[in-house]
Length: 310
Ligand code: G3H
Ligand code: 13P
Ligand code: ZN
Image 1 (cartoon, rainbow, N blue to C red):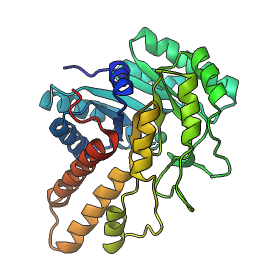
Image 2 (cartoon, protein in one colour):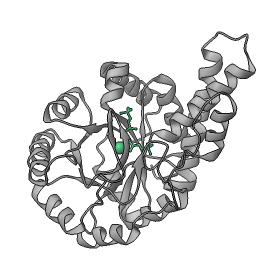
Image 3 (cartoon, helix red, strand yellow):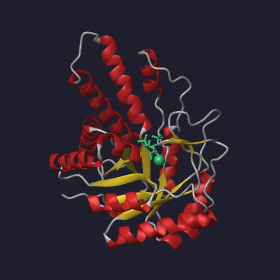
Image 4 (tube, rainbow, N blue to C red):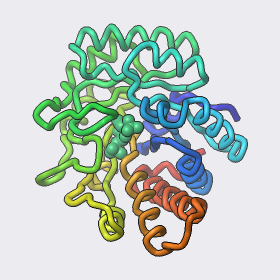
């Protein structure tokens, strides 16, 4: 099976009130762990590549690894998605390279400029059969080299969301309702603005909504990192019940990166600590790959609900 777009995936997810996990990929072990989990859970899957990932691994390697995953799991529905594209050029490059979905993130731009840029990407992407995710509102947190402070974060205005989607023709929309990127999401009580999400859904019935910054920062792995030499005190994510609740109100795509990073790094720290004589990377990358797989299975079964949906 070739790579698929997100169109049909989202249609089914919306109707079934579940979400598709969009997991960030940076190397072979991460891709293999995620794909193994999706295979076992029979879950449709989005593999997403950020600008940082393209720079780190070289986009061609990641594309070939994803193609290899498809050879290994031909029964899977996999979309290859550009995460946080910040220009028409990067979106065009990915579309021309075979990505089936792109995000154009104009959320930092003035409203009319975000519309114009998104529309330009939509026109090109749709002419090639590729789906487009856009973003309106600003999340707090760290993404690539950009750090948005909580004060600069702006929640998505539902009326503006309707206008934005109508005028750009984008296929899905990332909204800001309280999630944020990275491992330090909340200082006080974690909460999401579910009434705002409900209002967006009312105004845009049937339209797929995307949640970025949706890692839960699973305490078990924060503790594992800290126990074996890491220093990430006070890391805190979005409780999984809140993400689960959001999937009932039109959220069809849930972005997860930090939870994979924490699981992978925690296990590598532990393996190196427990086996100081080892210098064979396979002996710590293997367990790290298994930790990625277990994390993704946990998300599929306990948070996203997209198991057995192929
Ligand atoms: O939204 C950001 C993702 O976690 C990707 O992070 O830009 O460091 O690859 P990155
Ligand atoms: P987390 O940092 O919560 O994993 O969010 C990842 C993300 O939104 C990627 O676009
Ligand atoms: Zn994001």
